[in-house]
Amino acid sequence: MSEHTHPHQRKPGLRANIAGLRPISGLLTTVAVSRTAVVLYPFYGVYLAGERRELSVDTIGLVVGMFGLGALLAGVFSGALATRIPAQRLAVMGLVGVAGIALAISVTTELWTLVALTVLWGFCYELVNPIAYTLVSRAMPESNRRFAFSAVRLAINLGMGIGPVLAGILYEINPGLLPWGTAIGYLASAFILARARIAAGAAGDDGHAPATTGEDTGPGRHGVRFWSFLAVTTPVHLAYALPSTVVSVYVIHTLDQPAAWASAIFAVNGFMVITCEIALNHAMLGLSRRATLLIGYACATAGFVLMGFGAEQTWLLLAATAVWTLGEMIIYPVMPDHISAISPNRLKARNMGFYTAHFNLGVVLAPLLFLPLLDALGPAASWSLVGGVLLLGLLTTAAVSQSSKTWGTEQSQPTPTPAAADHQERTKELHSTT
Image (cartoon, rainbow, N blue to C red; front, side):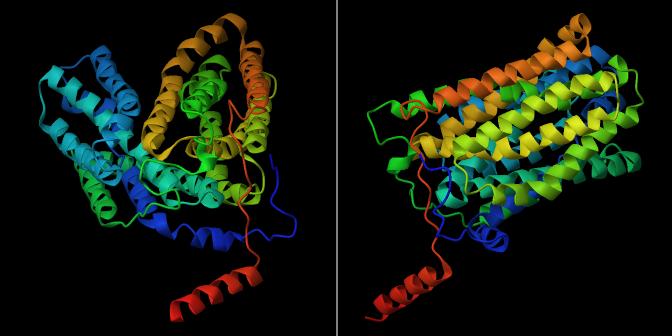
């Protein structure tokens, strides 16, 4: 197992890696535009409260919660759909579906129709994520894939940073504009993706993967590797669901601090992801997936344990956020990269779907498990328990990744020096003229 690229081979520069994203530029644009158009969901509850005054607060909570159910179902069934419908076309259908459902919600008055539409909305919204990961895994060579996944995350975070601000502006003008904003943005993103040319890479699209993807041994070995990987990364999804679901409660209610501290946590996280993730993943491309994941796990463990000390010194919340955000920027690009590497092409869409479902399951379970612990144990003990679970995940990952049976074989992709690249180019030209 190689941890680094060959010392005599020069790693491509950041500009070269960015230029290498050209095959998925249409997909990245689609992701950024669609996430910017998520203007209805952040204000969905207050939109329903204003436009559907007959609904109680509890009923509105039920309706909004159905979005998560639809998203969870999308992760489970996206793989089966992708075996019947080409992946790119399926993603376009999901984008168009969101646009149509948003407009349907704007004219729906029947409660159960609203519930059903919200489930479908969550399904179509989340359907795009595993399909996007699948398209990246097929289009990009293994040496560039992790960097490409970090670019997808950057597109997501850019869109999600702009979307809520745009939503607030539209809501102040007229709440009825929110469904139209989502519909127009999603139709635009569907048009961009439909026109994009995303070709399959070296692995092809014939249902077979190269030897490094987990089919180098007996049948079913890739299944053992995939399910082992999901099992050992479960603590990651549980822990990283906490910032978005319970941090505001923790800061404002448990610590009795001003809401500005919660906003500062989200600001630190967002700023670091947008400004640092691409460069960080470029710098770590020479490391194996195993080493990268273990480093990210260690950062996550330290960061979430440090969150508990915010009860003593509030500024430590921001230091803790910086540390677990570092772990987030390392872990989340390498996880789909590893799934791509151990999955045969015929199972890439299914496995990416299960991966996103795994993440959404963490979003559902984490607050249900953590908030009672917070009340019973207090801040320091509760966050230390989260860190302990992450440490257990780190140790389990270290053990599982020692075996090719449960992890796979990692091979560094040779990076030609400029001279070698020139020689290859001249050789191609010579062959083309003879």
